[in-house]
Amino acid sequence: MTTHFITTEVSLQENPLRLQKEIEAVLEKQGEPLRWAITEVDTEKQTVYVEGIVTK
Image 1 (cartoon, one colour):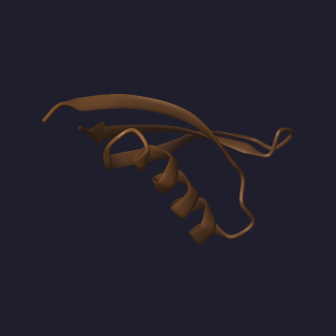
Image 2 (spheres, helix red, strand yellow):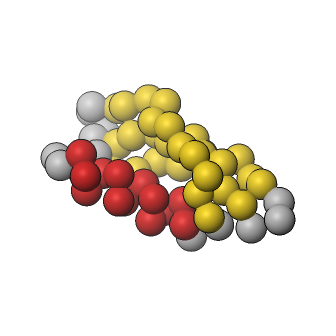
């Protein structure tokens, strides 16, 4: 098992539960998410920047 540091950009959702599911879905494409955090919100672009750790 190896861990990987992932950074990604996700569209901002109106519903926080939908945002969480979207972030987890994007990270799951890279492996199994261990933890993640929103590090920046761009209100003009309506995106959030996420950093996460996944295992493969």
